[in-house]
Length: 244
Ligand SMILES: CC(C)(COP(=O)(O)OP(=O)(O)OC[C@H]1O[C@@H](n2cnc3c(N)ncnc32)[C@H](O)[C@@H]1OP(=O)(O)O)[C@@H](O)C(=O)NCCC(=O)NCCS
Image 1 (tube, rainbow, N blue to C red):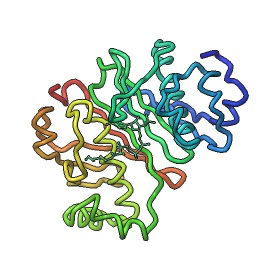
Image 2 (cartoon, protein in one colour):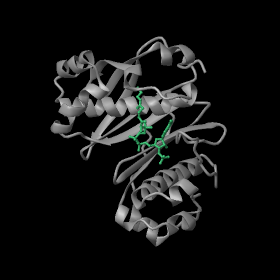
Image 3 (tube, rainbow, N blue to C red):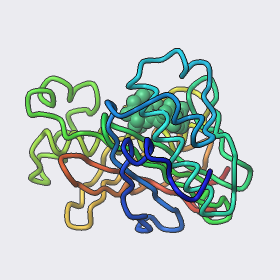
Image 4 (spheres, rainbow, N blue to C red):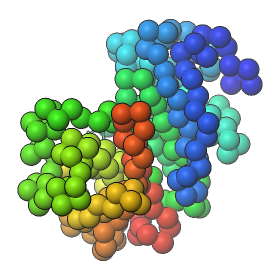
């Protein structure tokens, strides 16, 4: 990757300043414009284009490229050049030895969090547009149960905000823990047990399916930020927090 971004790249992707708020992890993010995406960006930036993505829609190519380009920038920050972040058959990214990371994208925003495994053992990041009240009213039973619903209400959060936070947090948990569990687990595997809007975190209790293999026996926090109509959530676990 050269130091000066090529013009088609700057037209497509606008980088946000690096965010170091996540302990020990570097977070690289940017907004992108799908209509400015061109497949040649893969070649121009030396980003590997898997066959599955070559055959995908322009939108999927654009979000995949944005995520992988941010991953390359983050790796480069830690001195790793030209590493192709491939994925397993479940789309879980395969990071170079000594690193752990996570990627997320919406229609126009992408983010990658990366950390050395000496500092963090698990990391999950997720961004979502805030759900409309109508969608939230329809979707909530698929994502949370009645007890989680009451915790959101008791925190005085509108359902669409509370559900968006919880949905995003659960997806962050999935991305962080999937590499240890290596099989699908649904939204009931982590239950919301507390919300702290002042300190911007949600707390989750894990089912034994998740907790036992990785030795977690207490609730864990997922932190969030609300910006530009979207939620960005993240969870990270240090070497002392996970037995894996
Ligand atoms: C996999 C899933 C979490 C992706 O979330 P999403 O909102 O659809 O999409 P995002 O843009 O936020 O994230 C996509 C990225 O997540 C990463 N990802 C996908 N599957 C992954 C996995 N199994 N493990 C870790 N990371 C994964 C990939 O980097 C992917 O982007 P890419 O394919 O371009 O590389 C979601 O589709 C899903 O299956 N959710 C149900 C499982 C769940 O959330 N359970 C709740 C447990 S409490």
